[in-house]
Amino acid sequence: MTNINVKDLTLEFGAVRVLDKLNIDIQEGEFLVLLGASGCGKSTLLNCIAGLLDITDGEIHIGGRNVTWEEPSERGIGMVFQSYALYPQMSVEGNLSFGLKNAKVPKPEIAKRVARAAEILQIEPLLKRKPAALSGGQRQRVAIGRALVRDVDVFLFDEPLSNLDAKLRADLRVELKLLHQKLDNTMIYVTHDQVEAMTLADRIAIMRGGVVQQIASPSEVYNRPSNKYVAGFIGSPTINFFEGSITDGGGEFLSADMHFPLTGYDASQGALTARPAWLGIRPESVITGTDVDHQPFTAEITVELVEPMGSDTLIYTTLAGIPFRFRMSGKASVAAGDALKIGFDPAQGSLFDKSTENRL
Image 1 (cartoon, rainbow, N blue to C red):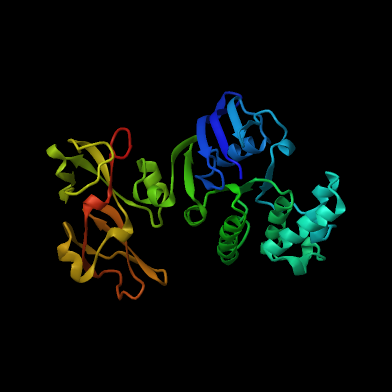
Image 2: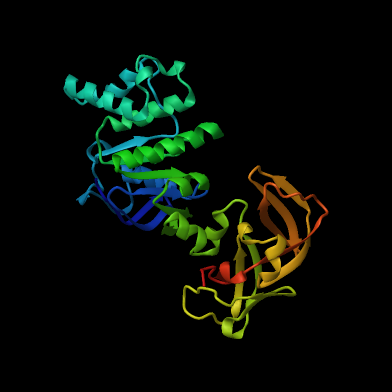
């Protein structure tokens, strides 16, 4: 197992700074997911770690060794790309063994590594087939296998599931997590899909504009986002935001004509003080039914749109003129135009400073 340390990494293309003094420490055997919108720099960072891009400043250490200017082949990594990049004229076995043959690995060792990768990925019956005879999921398994046979300590994945349909993505997510549990290798995984990030990661690094906004466990990122951007990026449907101000003593949050009690709020930076702020409430924090009257904040709403999702039903409405979304049971009998009483505990939400947008 190998750790990875990225120190003050900066990458510029001309006058454009794509990555800005990034510092990330990835532990041995950790599964780290780089998550963010298109153009945030996550794939660029992965390519820097792989050695496919020359950085402008900073250092990259793999297993305690400075590899900043080493060739990709010397860094002890295996990489899996979004495109399968398989040789169409070769069989699966040929694709798996090609790199090892070029590296002059002895034939018995090649056979051993190919057999091990095929067993782990459950592609043993496919070894004699060519890529054209494989499904998308099978091709991606072969692409992962090509990295596995290199017998390296670090695996880099660049959106490997994005070309697959929803069912295959869900199946391969499970297989990737099981693969990590079997191998216990250090893995870095790039995606824009928050479901992949939340389900796969030991820790998530959320990026924006070449800067890491927060790096923490999925639970920490979801329940205690470091700033308003992270809170809005994670979660589907997205978090509800109210613009307003905190009262003297931090007892209430005021927005429009609504008063939100903050008793019990777990502040990140000491006691709350009076200031302009945002209050974020997750859709699943909203209560309906018999327990509503026990909530610190209640309101009457009119249902505007219903989205049945099977296990859940998403409700869209407005609260004091502000768009508001919440979840109900998939068995809930509700339709557009229905009047409902809802409630929630504002202290279980997240407060963000209006100017800095950092968590309070």
